[in-house]
Image (cartoon, rainbow, N blue to C red; front, side, top):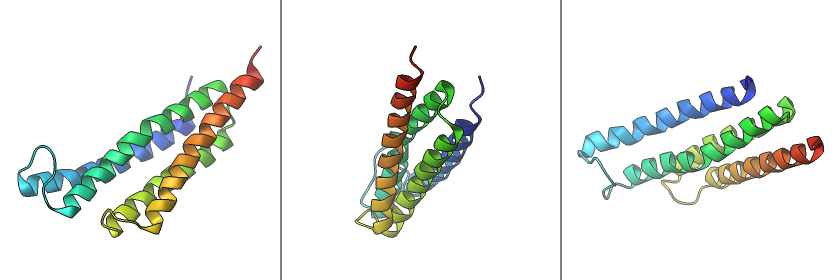
Length: 133
């Protein structure tokens, strides 16, 4: 079965991950450091921003895929996917502009990420309850 809605959000998330990974790689080349970070705050921020996406994206995408496969309405998955991607973009913006410290965009991005995962989890469970024979 095809999952066109999840596929779009997986592709967008993959591009974001590649961009964040490129930023980390540039710091690694600059400092000749293959593992860990040094005292450069920007380097640490780049690594944690990439890592944060890697921590949250799999669960969000798995929930979207399971929901799509189980028959959760495509409009719900689109809205949750847009909230997730929007939250991730805000988080990136807040991390870079706040230099890893507190920033409103980072806070809103984190909350949108958490909310999108929670909503998708509820939708998946609700769908299973509704469809159960």
